[in-house]
Length: 96
Image: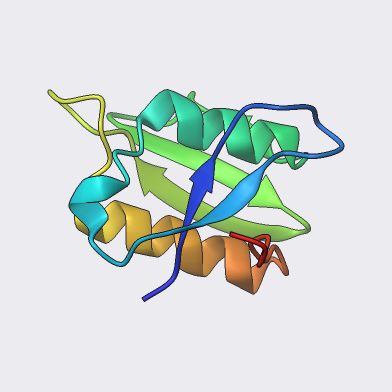
């Protein structure tokens, strides 16, 4: 399984890289996922009820759930984020 990891760089080069298939090794924090989406030009709507966050990237909407009490995304959320990015045409750098 291929996953994305965000390494903060610049909006022009958001640093999307391959991550090992072992999700425990990725350790994707919610704030990093939001930073990645914002760097890619996503509109983020955190005004929804509860922990739901609306995201619009390349005209494709999705609702994700802000993790709690831990700030880390669980395995399912990481997979959902990866699939959403792929649906939006965002692919990882293959050089890793």
